[in-house]
Length: 246
Image (tube, rainbow, N blue to C red):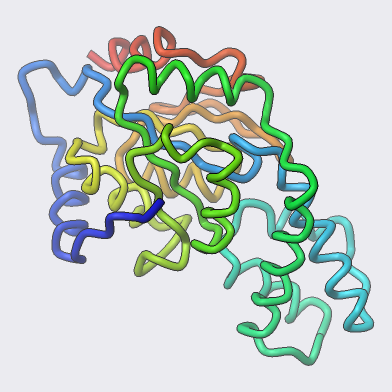
């Protein structure tokens, strides 16, 4: 599974269109695509990342404070790893640490990759109904491709990795990239996310967000609907979100 990464000027035009609130005949009420986060949203791996971070830093002679978990969850590798280096004072380059973390994560998911409740059913429903779907993650391409083998690459028209965009989450680039790659309007996309970082990215792109909180609580807001799990999300529910915006 490869990504489709439009040029920067395409992303800029998409973002200007969103912020200008371009009027359309149906008021943007038709669902055109569903864009899904990966870790903590489709696969129950947020805890895996933290466990790997704890193990890697222990091997470097440092202990991680459990309160830091809420700081690094959902963030891109550069931010989370950079924060942990600064917080611990570990003497390791960011690039080298990223390799260790990705290696550790891949080893962890080789034996088990638990899906979030409702994930398999939702992906199957979207595929069966021909809904354009993209996987949008802050994780690196090497990790996404490993996870896709378990999720089923046939469920996604494209995927966008954190190391393939100019700016990853919380910036809008990943979701604008996915929308442009699918040829759809971000305003008519439903995004499913589990963290504040991912939600900020999707909302900055103009998408309607379905928040399924994993590690930290998420509050409801305009163009943001909070649900307890993916078991509450189906195609009828997603179409209803767009109808409510008329």
